[in-house]
Length: 114
Image (cartoon, rainbow, N blue to C red; front, side):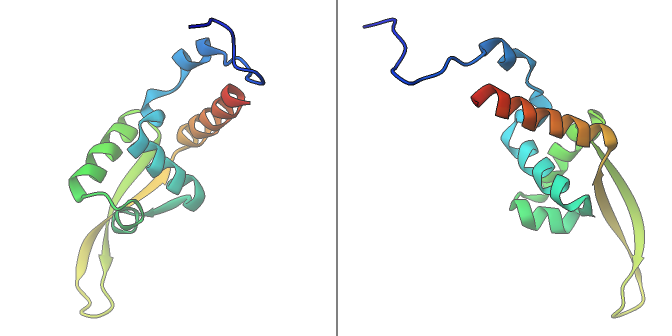
């Protein structure tokens, strides 16, 4: 066994790994944030369909992202066109803190692997 680097490989700043935001780095939350970053805002059902998560899985990860201050959840009553009844709907958007954290995460990943 050799302690030499592979030819052509560049060293990774492993100290950067300790600073990675674990709220974002978790794959399910990363997927949610990536969709929200592209969409700005959406409703719970649409995000559930995009991520292909169960209701509970999506809700659990959104709770963690909301606790971190990265997403804002807002429940509203929305009138259905078909029958005129109001039904509750949850809307999700990235907060400014969430946008900055996601951008920082993306830049950190680029820097780590460049």
